[in-house]
Image (cartoon, rainbow, N blue to C red; front, side):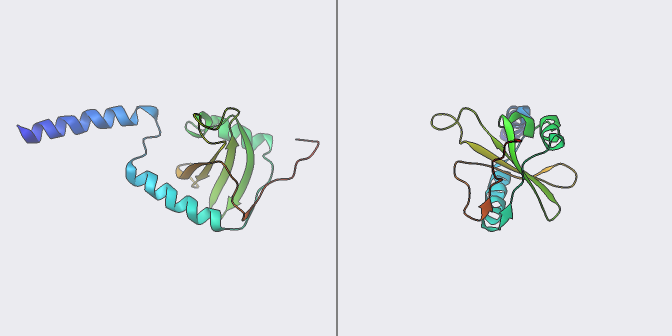
Amino acid sequence: MVLSLITWKRKQRSLDVYEDGFGQSLADDARFFVRFSAMRRQHIVWRWPALLDETRAMEHPIVSRFGDATVAVAQIDDRYCLVRDRIWHGWPDAPEFVFFALAADDTIWSARDFDHWPRNWKRPHLSTSH
């Protein structure tokens, strides 16, 4: 009886947790944290997103739900990385930026919110065309 109750609760919990489509577990969250920490130590020169980059972000079933606009993209090894900005940010709202690193098959390799750009990351320069 106890085993069936645990199994039933586990199924119910998994249905509730994964309804948002992202479905990251605590292990995924820890993995994303470690991967983001490694990425923030890398020297990355970001570029402004082209229309195709914004389209790719908006068509991605998960990335599109985070942030309001893509503000930087980079290709790091075999991962497509992007940073999206939020119009509303800061307490009690989410941090200003969200980082995604996508694997070649567009699965999320890492994702993390942040407020301040890492020192090793070079933001794209503002220009009159963007």
